[in-house]
Image 1 (tube, rainbow, N blue to C red):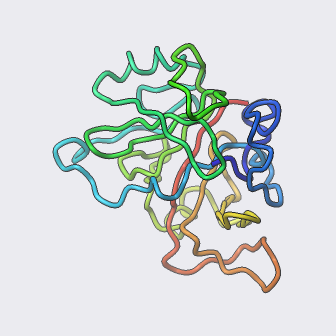
Image 2 (image 1 turned 30 degrees about the horizontal axis):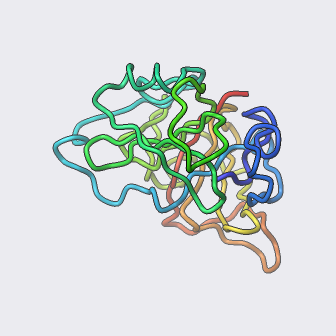
Length: 216
């Protein structure tokens, strides 16, 4: 999960913040997007639990998503969101993550500086990164996860750059008026020149794949 955006948000996330993630997939840096854990694409929400997520909206702000805020301990987070279920999860890079589920669906994934995904959750750890693939989550400006990039441009301005990571080929997009606290990922729909990992072009059907908010 630790990808190309792990650098500015969480103090030295690869070796200093996420010891053991030094082998993570880091590509060319996007301004303010170089060191944030990248949650696995497998956690993208494909089907919503109608009883739990229909008509629900969780606001993405500079401080967190819904009731879960950056800087909270994991224990404080589970108390603030008692209807959710907190479970240990990981990714191909071996990052120790916490999946927050509502019903059967992953609502968001948390990183709290833990190092060993095989150990139980340390509830005293503080949250530094929150990422969601769930369309129930929407930015303050009204951008919902799963929205077309064309619609995102109407909110945040034209696409400034799309960068593809070297190993996992995850694609991160930055807009002209990109909020500094948000990192956007798209659904592998960037159009890259041969041999390049950076572009400003994307397919018409390109969508916002995830939104990440992180501490600095």
